[in-house]
Amino acid sequence: MKSRSRMPGPTSSRRRRALAAGLSAVAGLGAALALGSPAAAAGASYVALGDSYSSGTGTRSYISDGTSCQRSVYAYPSLDASALGLTLTFRACSGATVADVTNTQLTALSTGTAYVTISVGGNDAGFASVLTTCAQPSWASNCNGAIDTAQGIITNTLPGRLATLYSSIRAKAPNARVMVVGYPRIFNGEDCNALTWFSPTEESRLNATADLLNSKTATAAAGAGFTFVNPTSKFVGHAVCDNVEWLNGLSSPTTESYHPNIAGHRDGYAVLTKPAFGITATLSPTRAEAKAVASADSLARDASRYAAVDRTITPERFVAPDLHSPAMRAAAARAGVDLSSRASIDAADRLWSARQDAERQEAARR
Image (cartoon, rainbow, N blue to C red; front, side, top):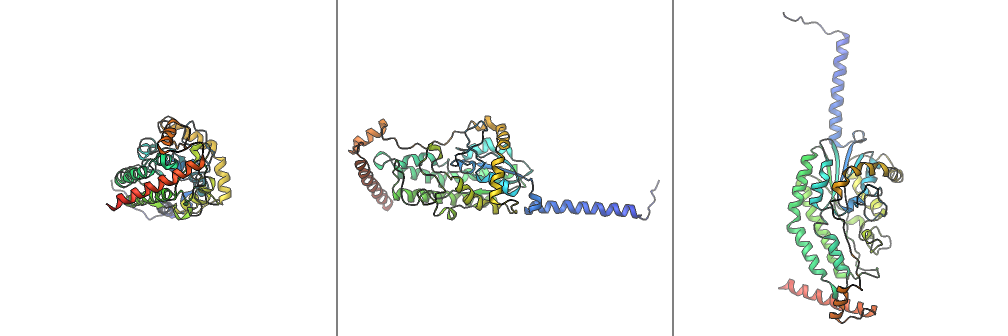
């Protein structure tokens, strides 16, 4: 039996208009999500991936999540989430390598993830071990060799690892805006810490290594269609030994060493990363920090779900020079250093440092 057509009455017309309005609203919401508008961002899912420079190591205040990840409410992911009204899943963990991020953090991503930040690569290059070597007197270490090894990994190995990781992030979070965050230069050319022996040349080479790491990371990020956030210029004037340090020098405990402090995250990283989300902050920095601090318990409860896998990550271990260790005493004996005399220690350090620099320059000319 044929159905009879009829002219639409007032009620059906209103329904159609309401349906059209609803469809338009859905389309507008989709467009807003794609553009990262302020209205669409409220409560949106934000996953923070990566290593200690994202977890907040160096801020000296960490949530109690049953791990050694050193996640801090003062870290830029927490500050950004609070300022922008986002729901944070905090997965960044001290010591994480590319493999660790892949194996322990990517399960937090989904098609509903709206925003992702990540810093990773420094531990693949041996960040802590290189600094441990270079902090020692030159007569007891081979800083240039450690830096050469790190630069080789950054140049030859890391790009492939990052490309694979970024591809996995995109596959698991296809709708997310992804921001890759780089590393600052740690040093300013002087060493004001009494128990470390970084020479100006070593500090320059370590800063150049950070630049190299940022360059390779930025290239990989661009290849994946991700945004790269470079902190280099923002941290100028705030390195270790600057008048206003945003980066800790040798600290107690040593795990705090050579990482951004609270000011480094608040005035450095958070200022750089917030605009990259493409949305408007709903809170001032002061109110955002207060909200972040108040979120400690909820962040800890959420992070504790992943505690078992997080405990498979090896924490970073910068080791301060120990002039009383057997290895150091043996090195001092070979170099003719009197360990009871700071003048003897420092004079030999300058001599050996100059000798090693000359040898490196000669090798480069060959």
